[in-house]
Image 1 (cartoon, rainbow, N blue to C red):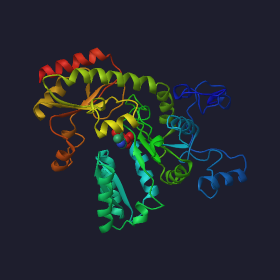
Image 2: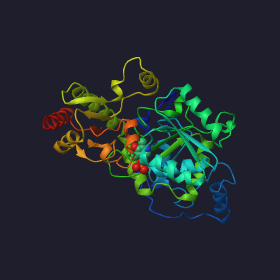
Image 3: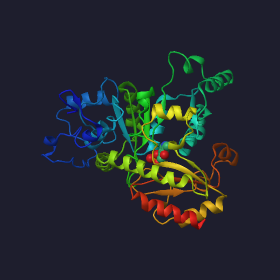
Length: 392
Ligand SMILES: *Cc1c(COP(=O)(O)O)cnc(C)c1O
């Protein structure tokens, strides 16, 4: 049930029951965890029909459950709920954000193709594209995030002159699908499908899981594109496992509560940090220069500034490290979107192996601290950041 009369129910309501029928599980209020690797067919003919669906020989996918590398009850309920916030026709769950991205790229890219992407992407995605898919004869072109449409078009023209990617593959009728990594703002604060993206991919490890206790990923989009990715996922086995899918069902029930609280906390903390004498700059979406191009995109595309931001301290690595080592509530760890506040030094940690020139071009300086705000008491967090800044 997704509506009462002509009132469409909101995602925060649907997260409690959508996609699960208790009568199929002995009346259990919550779905049991289906720890089984395979499912029993009622007849040989039914088994054949299911395999016709699984292999793509018959459109529409399997009508029943076959084998846990293809799907299972927990994953199917999860996928029903993952599609809700973006109003997507279909959704797939994956064992990690990276396995979602890898399966998506392997589905659509062939030797001679070119992946055009904004930079920087998540570090592992850049490695996958440049080092792994590059080995398979798939090229790439990255444009700086924030580039205008004209700048991107100029880069594409130049790349086509020397690249193998045919003009009609990039600009013509068979234009390639557009996929957005929505991990930092999804699914609450940004819905890329509503703005023309074909696929929205995200690491469920972050906000969706939300408790830093699981690793998973998702892709949502049109039924036609998801069908192609599903066939690749069936082959590779990159689906999430039943237990993780069940954990995510629990997480999604509180997703909006957690994200709203974390977003409000981040606004409170950033307002304090912004004017602090030891702070050079706060890279927070809520502080974009009014009337700038980025602010225009932000107001049209996003409903919140998120809870992940960067903090540049006056000084260099020594100041950043003293700040990090003095934090009491915030834990020193990489990742984001959990209930607890995390802080790290990207230049010395996640981006350690990125060449110095590229780090400089991306603004990943030694005095930069990456922060993900959790759902703690906001004034406790301000107290912690204040004492850590005093220790610098
Ligand atoms: C974490 C992250 C990923 C990778 O997700 P995993 O679940 O760690 O595999 C991809 N993109 C972004 C933006 C991320 O933050």
